[in-house]
Length: 154
Image 1 (cartoon, rainbow, N blue to C red):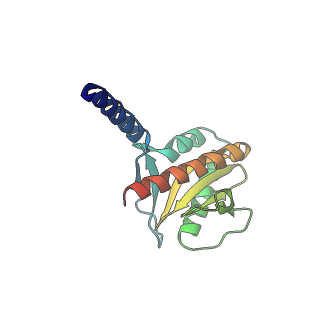
Image 2: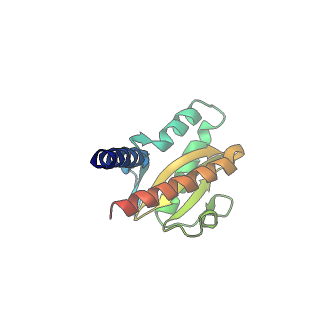
Image 3: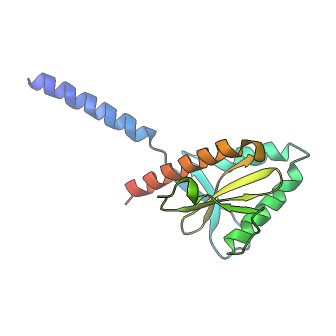
């Protein structure tokens, strides 16, 4: 009986350690030298800065690269508490109504940037207009994972 009990405890510990390794870890990488009134940064998930891959991709596309500056300008405007017209900003709270955090999209003609607000404005991911539906699903999942991560840290 003791041996059987030990086996169960062993498997329970394995399951627990497996589930703990699946929980994402989040940190914030500050964005230096940008004049804003609120703190800003890039969301880092499991050591990976999520927006960096998107930025690299867009910088290599000569047609889209000029819009990147506009996208960051819109982000700075929102981070400073400014207003943007509907064609440049959209609140995404309707996609997860019970979210403890605000999250929004800033946009240009072809590009999107998704931002989480938690005491500051933190860039999560970027995307292209054609991938918008999938990107919104992805950012909702990121915000859910972030909320779960923050709840476990309390």
